[in-house]
Length: 123
Image (cartoon, rainbow, N blue to C red; front, side, top):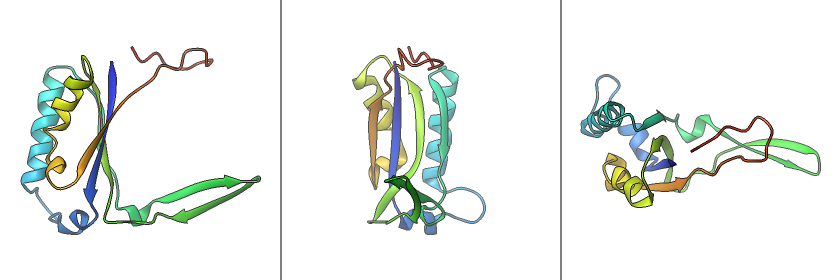
């Protein structure tokens, strides 16, 4: 089964990242990515840009608006899409994400898009 691990990190972390090279947390991510890749459990992963560079899009009564994201201390910093046996297995991976020590990791199962034409199979 596939799980999405949403990595929430304090917004201040974006400002603390070194301009060149990596810090211990980034090395931790690299190590986890390597391990998940070696065991063929990693489907995709990526860091996200600073929340100030994103927008929240809403459509109400046919009108679309795009507003700056409001930041309340922490925000989604990135994601891992993994293959896991079950929820406990996915949680075990989430515990290895460095940001779990200063922020949190949301673990969510992906649901199949059965009945939707062209929907991907997620088994």
